[in-house]
Amino acid sequence: MKKISQLLKRLCAPFVRDLLQQFRDSSCSATQAAEQLQVSKRRLYQLFHSYLKAVGQRKAHQWSPRLSSGARRAAWPKTVQDLVVRLLKAKPPCSYSLVASECLRRLHHTVDRATVRRFALQATGLPLCLYVDFHSFFFSHLPGAHTQLADSLRFYGVSLRFAPTPQAKGKIERGHQFWQKRFPALLAADAITTLVEANPLLEVLRRHHNTMEQHREIRCTPQAAWDQAKKESRWALRPAPACPWWPYVFSQRTRIRVGDDGRVAVGTQRLSVDAPPRSKVIHCQHPNGDVTVLQQPPDPEKMPVVLLSTRLC
Image (cartoon, rainbow, N blue to C red):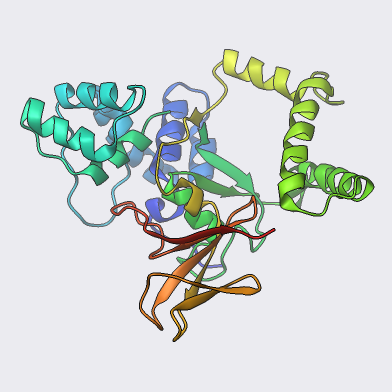
């Protein structure tokens, strides 16, 4: 299996930063850190040296491993960062374009909305990394390529770490098997056949399991274990970003062609869209059963253009 040589092509910067901080705090050894990053110890110490320089400059939250080439963006002045944070935390929050406008009006600092969005995503509900197996849902056997799920997670800076052995994979599969045995049986017993009915039940079951059912190995509920981990700072979550692409990134996306009649196939129907005949658009199947047709795939530098939105039920 061919590995991708550049670290940033394999893992996202927030996960690398968190691991180097653990190494700095002696929470993990050099061997463990190098293994998780899949680099040599020599490369680990090169990264650590660069990270410590950023720490000394109070820019650790902006540090990222370098690619082989390319210019780096200069850090914002503290006055700009403070203003951006205050505007983003307002209720209701300011849009990215408004934040950029206010930076120019108040501080005469020019910044575009895409840069504001990237800054907002650096804040801390998203995980830093997910532990998965080599199922084709997660792993692409094409060198340098990502599956749609992996690509969607990378859009928000979430890395995937692949289980190296069958024994490690078994720990992942246990949770899947738990729900695969329970959920279909309940759906059949209650004659539930649509996503609109099934999704609320899944949420009720998840909350009940996490708060009421004691795990036989850890001798407490999953929620209690999670609360304890937070109390001991053994967790790494970031808030879910207020991003306009969020519902479309986490959908099943396929590229489809507009017919000569200006319509696209949505389920058993053909519906009109405001796009040229024979042009390609993005069909998004959402978990709740909704279908959206977009003008283009997710792009952090642009806003989504919705051509059609409907529900199949």
